[in-house]
Image (cartoon, rainbow, N blue to C red; front, side, top):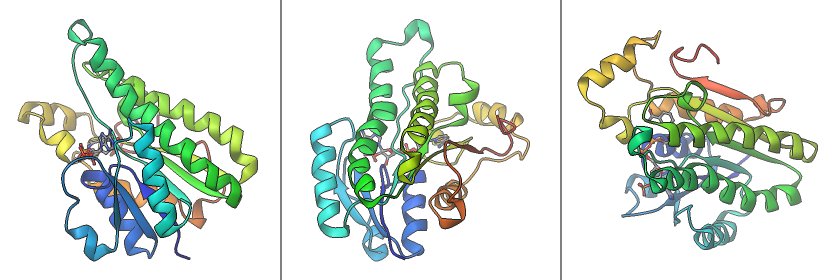
Length: 239
Ligand code: NDP
């Protein structure tokens, strides 16, 4: 059955791979696009790009209205959009901290809260939040990012308890190192140091994250909620 799926930050990287996976399975997929033009590939996939910066509640509302008009209420939400502003604590400004929290955690709150309305009415829904291995293990220079990603776990688990009786599941995917624009900025020695700790000795692909997200939104995962699924080549050893 074709469902209305929203993937935030689906214009590139992991989000684009997730959008592609749902579209290939026949779902009606919308993605948020914050800046620039959406990739041309989306048109051939039949994916609907909606302009939306998730730090702006007004834009979130507008995006949902457009999706509801074209695809119906969102039945599967993937909160994937995220940013980093790495800095050692000594040099981390309050803005570095709050802007990462505002995008990664409060941004997820904004889109989940808005999706919840339709899911309650439909008496079903699937929410997948994209966290990070760093949220559970910590990482020097990423206190802001790790706090935001750990926050997603408490957020999802609280909602899993709050809304389980309404047949809405909330799960978290915690990727490890994945090849994307976010990790392309790493210097060669940083990449080597990172891989040294990964049992599978390679970066993950965006498609490997997408496969797990799609599983959590599928019928096969109907009895899974409040879970954190690591997709990290063994880095976190299942946490
Ligand atoms: P990218 O930097 O490649 O893409 C980030 C996406 O988020 C872009 O589509 C970007 O939109 C969007 N985005 C950022 N801020 C906002 C905003 N305010 N409103 C709407 N969209 C926004 O990152 P990845 O694809 O690598 O990461 C995707 C998710 O996976 C993130 O949550 C990240 O933290 C997480 N992750 C990534 C890992 C990795 O190794 N790559 C590891 C663990 C977790 P725009 O194009 O407009 O900037």
